Length: 71
Image (cartoon, one colour):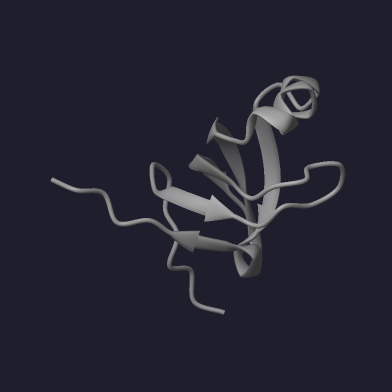
C-alpha cells in the first residue's frame, strides 16, 4: 500500500470505539498502516471521550480522508 498521508496533513476520520461522531485532526506520526492523529474538531457530544483520549487517536489509513485546506 502506497502511503499518501504525511505528517501535518489535515484528515477527516471515521468514528470508532466510544466516539459517536466522525472527527477532524492533524497527522502527527505515521506508521505502516495507520497514523497518530491529534483531534482538532469533534462533536460536543464526544468531548469527554476526546479528553479521555488526550486529544489523540491511532487511526487506520483506510478510515481517514485527506482534507483540502483553502489557501
